[in-house]
Amino acid sequence: EAGVTQFPSHSVIEKGQTVTLRCDPISGHDNLYWYRRVMGKEIKFLLHFVKESKQDESGMPNNRFLAERTGGTYSTLKVQPAELEDSGVYFCASSPYGRTNTEAFFGQGTRLTVV
Amino acid sequence: AQSVTQLDSQVPVFEEAPVELRCNYSSSVSVYLFWYVQYPNQGLQLLLKYLSGSTLVESINGFEAEFNKSQTSFHLRKPSVHISDTAEYFCAVRGLTGGGNKLTFGTGTQLKVEL
Image 1 (tube, chains in turn green, red):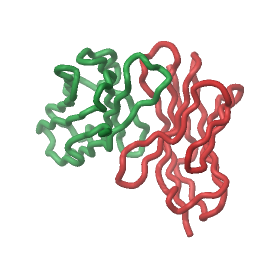
Image 2 (cartoon, helix red, strand yellow):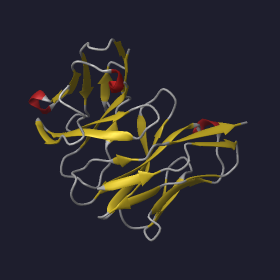
Image 3 (cartoon, helix red, strand yellow):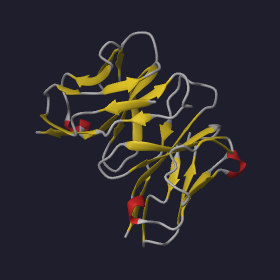
Image 4 (cartoon, helix red, strand yellow):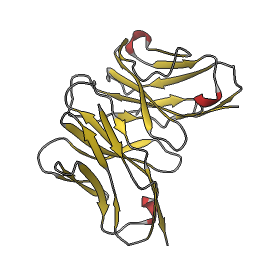
């Protein structure tokens, strides 16, 4: 069974440009999460989808970030326009819905560098 | 709301020596506790978890952690480390009620095993 897949693994963009990150969760996992780690700091929650609906987006930094999950399968996280402070590693995770006693499975992350 | 404190950002240790990585948490509700590990150039992997029952939990590669409710701690230990244990270790909590399924992470501890 394939794990959580994230694309691209690395992205270097200039300030002001747009970048779109993609996450393919484990098949059948209705919960999908985005997290971010800014260098040297903790991994912070960004938002949570249940299928295609945003359950919790309290961690989204500002309106330059837009997350979508059309059809309840893969998800995209778009940053437009990117700023220097957006640099970091963006993790996606998924888990089955309705099973609170299970862990979230993480992807390898996308390392975003804004220059 | 929850918070997690990992006081040690880096822990150097010689191979075959014991190690303890400290984790303390704060929460107004009961929590599930997790340790995730990130090996070089890889994604986050679950190392072990405490959900309920025995307060001592073990991983398949010799790590163990003990949930101490009175001290609000979940320290990670291994009696004899191997060079392959070099990685970054993250402690995380998730509230049993409220807050959805999102994880709150500590800042991570870099374990460096030396020969």
